[in-house]
Each structure stands twice: as structure tokens, then as C-alpha cells.
Image (cartoon, rainbow, N blue to C red; front, top):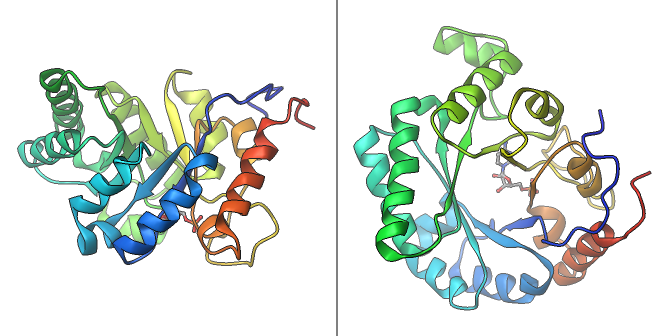
Length: 250
Ligand code: C5P
């Protein structure tokens, strides 16, 4: 299903490059070379645990927006404190697990808003992760409760939105159903993007950048097609150029 008929000119670069590299020096080098061609960079658990908040500050000091993907899941008070700390760090997006429950998500949203307001800084987007794409119905069955992955994704997405969350991380295949289910202002952040020119890897269900935007994605998380390319800056530039074409989507 097509969510948008035409992708006239994309003004804001929707590409978030995943800096899935182990060291600060690699991450900083990549971020600097990619900055002109991406909208933000994503720092996940490996890089954050090995390089810490310093790598966030270093990359941000070059004016590059950071998506801190640590997928918080804990009691509401602890998550609120972690979100407040991430907001003080200056990140523009962060993630929590919707399965932490509505009270936890409300606490996260409130902490982001209150901390940003104290600092007179912009409020970071608090995004919710529904069901990890590594989970199938057998894995859900082990936990008890709902065993249909799509139903559980929809249940957690609705719960997140009711708790004040304004963005969700979802797989390309979930885009059409979530776009039907959720208010249009909800941002959908989608990994599993492949251009078609890279090696096959562990992403099984993929869309191209344009297809994902057509299907309703707001932001595209792209890792290996950019950072593992022979020339990462050229790969990012080519993706950005492909999205800026004025031609209607064919
Ligand atoms: O290299 P690749 O483009 O597959 O990287 C995708 C990024 O998005 C990685 O950082 C991965 O951890 C993350 N991600 C994902 N699938 C999800 C959630 C996050 O691939 N369902």
C-alpha cells in the first residue's frame, strides 16, 4: 500500500546512519564524513558502552544530531532519570521499550519535556520500540500472552501513543498497518533499509529508502549500506540524492 502518492522534494534529510562501530575514533570519523549527507546519527549500545557520553558530546559538537538508541526498560523512576540524563546530554531522539508499560512511557515523556524546559532546550523525541524483530510467535509464546507478532505490535503501538509517545521504531513490513492504525502525526522510524546494491546480510525483510518513505516512514535507519560501503560518504550522498529527486514516485 502506498502511503504517499508523491514524494515531491524531501526537504529534511530522513536518513539516520547507525554508527555500529566499536570505537569512538571510528564513530567520530564516520560521523564527520557523513554529516553533509544524513539527517542524524544513531549511537547504540555497543558504542555507548565502550565509548560513553564523551562520544555523544564529540559528535554533537560538530552540530550533528544524535539518536541515542539504548532502548530503556526499567521501573518508571529509573527510566525517567535516564531520559533526563540523555536530555541533558543533548540527544535529539532516544528509545524506550513499549513493553515497559504505559506508566514507564509516560514517565519518560514527562522527563524529556521537563528537563528540556528547565534547560530551555528542544525536547528530544522519545520513541517506543514495540516487538523486537528478532522475536517470532514462538518467542512471544514463551513469554505468555499474545502470540501473534502483528497483533502484539499493534497493541504496544496503541499503548505507546496513549501514553504520549509521538514516535515508534518499526520494521518496513509494519509500516502500512501502523499508518492505518495511528494518528498521522506519529513518526515512524524504520530500519531494514537496503538500496539493492549491497551484499545480502541478516536483514530479511527490507525496503529501499524511497519505498519506505512511500509506505509511511518518517525516518530511515541505515547502517551497513552506508558504513560498510567502500566509500561511506558516496553511499550516503547517493541515497540522499535519490530522495531529493522531484519526480513522482513510480
Ligand atoms: O546495518 P543495518 O542497516 O541493518 O542497521 C540497522 C540498524 O537498526 C542497526 O543499528 C540495528 O540494530 C537497528 N535495528 C534493526 N532492526 C530493528 C531495530 C533496530 O535493524 N528492528
